[in-house]
Length: 371
Image 1 (cartoon, rainbow, N blue to C red):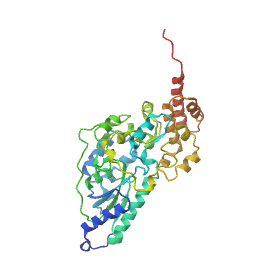
Image 2 (image 1 turned 60 degrees about the vertical axis):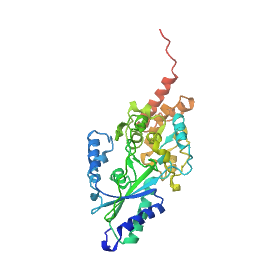
Image 3 (image 1 turned 45 degrees about the horizontal axis):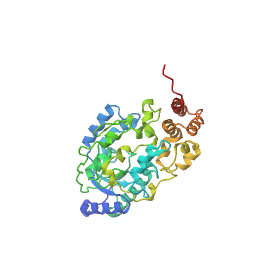
């Protein structure tokens, strides 16, 4: 869309204040405005790619030039309106972190990352950003803009930092003093010359809890993540066989991982969602591994309709569950569930089921008497 309004007719400071108010009305926890310069983030990305830490995410290298220059996404872009959308389910109680740790400690439970237990955030966030963009247009007339979620090649953490929404934590996620890190980020790139906000101050200090808590040691240094070791990457983005040496470390996490967030002191301030979209669906906060492994492909597609989980497909869903079942306490029920998939049509599934069954066979084998 192109901007037809004469700049002299618009009070951009007042408009910026209105945008924040409209954003709040739409359920956003914070709204900020920044310019679109992302120089330092570009250098960081290039180093990350050079080390091969993006794994199978080839699009990170393929779209690096777009991330480096937002005007390639929207010619004439000079500002980014950034928003925070909290996603902790509304029914979460004050003991939510303790409950998550208890589930992780129970090897029979299937642990799905909190953000993925409700509706697909891409759709929810995009729809709300479009409403905000339309509200701006009703105020100023036609203007150039593009709505972005994390499916677009944008340095959203770097831009949100510049708006003051938060700072980049040592786990590489954005942190907010009043909301922790349990939120999504979205942007509207625009040619409107809105006044910009101040960057956030950083408040990680000497804390290293996220680094110490990572099950696979994927946070290789403060602010440096090797995706190839990250459980979120391995269970979602990684399309092939999960490296054998990392499988035992995945535990019962079948889609994503929240450990670095659960230990973060700032997440005692994590806000519950303002929207019902992120309420837990299909019991994903209490399901067992055996229960989910028994789903047919039709059940998988029906129950995950409208969910971010659907994107990994049924084959990887079973792959992830097979690994988790391989890490579960040995029992006749676990072995029977795995054995039922031993001849699955997918070679990927069969390989992970065989690994899991071998783990349980080893656990059941009697100890060899000492000579």
